[in-house]
Image (cartoon, rainbow over all chains, first blue to last red; front, top):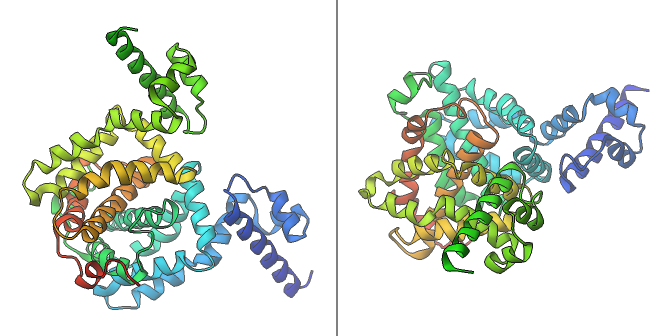
Length: 200
Length: 200
């Protein structure tokens, strides 16, 4: 297969996977169904992407591109990171990648915590940790606090659709939640809490 | 049936339901299975509790008792509510009611958003709203922000078990997240965001 053709086949598989993952849960989608939707042989999916987990990861990364999101946010002055991160994260959830992201959150929370942990922890929070100041344990705590506030907003706004969060305009969420994220990222944290490395 | 016997039967049904809901998902538990576990006729469950939704609600309220939790927290000075609410909420998740609460969160997020919305929104946040100051729309926003941060902490700490949140001691979470909750409850919120009632 020529490189261009191979690239088109990859893209077709990713499109098919994204639309199926978005419509159903992670468990409800078989590799065979993705192959059928993409019009390719199932073996080709394994050849390009490995396991279903890996394919899912690829679908999310293509839409979400955590690297470019974090790069963009950290190009702003440090005291604006909180608001910019909320703005970027909500933008992502409301982008074409949104449905697949909601699907991973839903499946991840319900039955694939390992998948969600890997995607959020290894792909997003680890990138963020690299931009923060302080000792590693403190930076890891900051990142997981940021992650927890985002998970909560996503669940309330997009999955459970709890009002008045569900219909709150993006810029209002930015203003309300931005300062929380900013404090987690760069604010003073209680010294006892950040110094003992999480010891009981 | 005598009042005492009827009370014991109710308790036996609630115990059976709690242990089954905790072990499986909401969907995985039938009224028939609860009846079998409790050693009663399925019709008796309908008689006492109505639908499975109602029974689930009752199981959670018995364990969680949102009323007493909110009463206890609001008996503290207002500037301590943030920390006290985190302390009480984590205490509840680590109490015997914890497994059933995790089950409702898991099922609710995955497939019963209405159930979760009703339980969190109508049972917990509405109580909280009654204790806050300001116009109703502003109080509703404060409450849903509080709810979103708690959902995020619960998902990260208990459902997905994301480190370093999963093994973080309760008092450390209280110190780190308390100020966020305090700001959402009683802090200055951006005036544009709270004055326009959520209009675009």
